[in-house]
Image: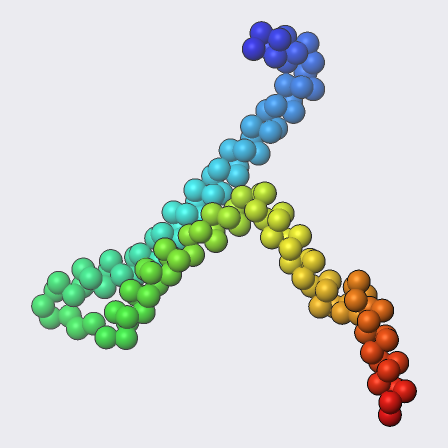
Length: 129
């Protein structure tokens, strides 16, 4: 710890980099927390408001709206694992690399290790016909 403090005191650039990294981490944390609180409010607010208005005797709630609000609430629980993983940089990088690999295979189907087999099969088909 003392060595770190000496480095920060000796090199102002180190201190600036540390402060910049700390600021980036705070911004990422704020973004993550905001997304989770916002998605919670968006998904649960319709259900809570619907349930509270059902308590009033003179207000009628459409049955379809009740089903939609309940499904929205359930979708929050189902989407949380995806949101957690997409907000983490490591998972995002892996997901992007997997998607790129899959898209490249679909875009260029004959450029893989089996491309010689494809051309041999085409040649055999041409010879037969």
